[in-house]
Length: 138
Image 1 (tube, rainbow, N blue to C red):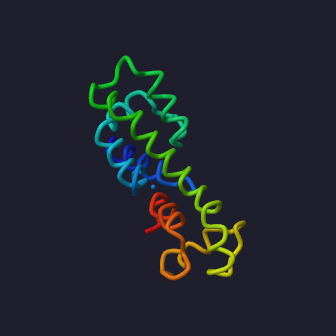
Image 2: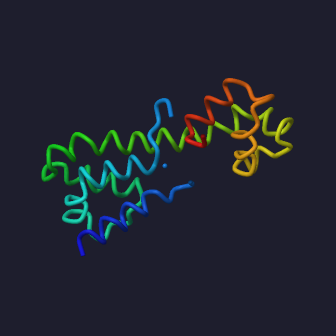
Image 3: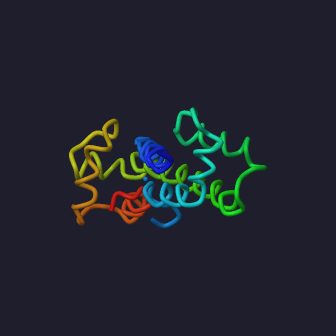
């Protein structure tokens, strides 16, 4: 039962649209959170909607009963998730020229151009490639 609850929380955290250089994949972040704080989440955050904001708030409210490992890891994990989300938003701005000219796409639907940005080596600027890497797309 406890393992199933932790698995559900871990899967739910990976769902934001939504997971390189200074970012951590959503999967790695969630795995670290589950390993460090799984028992605390089950014991103290039962009934909390397991999106990253509410879960972070729950852990912060219960900081006094968290294990030392969870206390040292959870803020870094949520920071990494926010950095990855911000990096994905940045791709549309940094790669605007490439999305339109090289990939024939629209910056309003950046996600449709990501496969092109990843697989087309010619015409993609270094800044765009870095943004794609930071976002975890390649």
